[in-house]
Image (cartoon, rainbow, N blue to C red; front, side, top):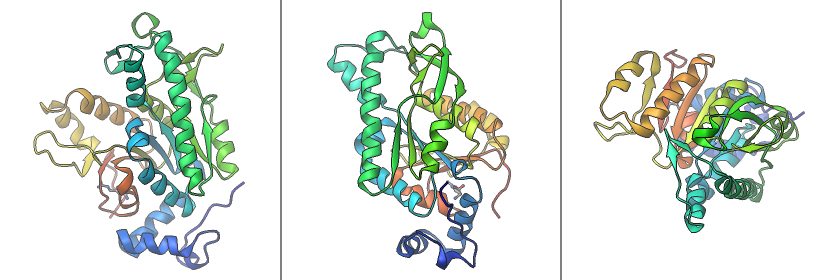
Length: 308
Ligand code: ARG
């Protein structure tokens, strides 16, 4: 397997395979040496595959690929192996429009007919390679994984068509990529046991993956760099779900996407150890979010105080 970088106080300077310059850049640009060291130790203290699941929205691949590839490369250079899972919603909508197919959603789920699935499969495959290529171009080994991880049954064929409900997650391809030293780059497509490909919402797939992996961090990369408070218009810093969830769900501005996302994150964290937390952040500020106490985006946790 791949040697995991360790960052005990004594061994920092001798850490193997990591450019000292990289660490220095991290240390001096974003936070105090002490806190950055603390997070490096913390994130390196678990099995490589349990560091983070990072959900990459489709728009990030089309509009912020450079900043995404550079932030992820940075993580890998300090010895971490995040698992990437991406969507391709905006790209798919564009192609559907070109083909004269009207996108159709019920309760936030894309109704998927055969024509939509055909286009979805090719756009997923293309975006998957695009993300892996961008990483490889920066010297970060990446393995495109476009199937074989998610098994599903039909969610409700009458209502949603070719949409899957994940019943099993096969960690094999993920573990194999990481032990070969490559970052797993996954799409959210799933297969039934007899091989029918089904479409799965990428946020939902990220949650199902996280339930099986139990990572320290689940990161949702978005363009806004966090979750906005509908009343103040400001970015929310920390949400302690145990204390804040019910009140938040009563707020008039918590509707549509925000409501879905909050509920989903709340439910996900109920299934994970209290040491797991969710961050919503832009690719540009990922390092600051992960390696400082104050972060840069929105942190959601159950309420356990992990940090002093
Ligand atoms: N670096 C820590 C983490 O990733 C804390 C982040 C705090 N973030 C925030 N938006 N308040 O878990």
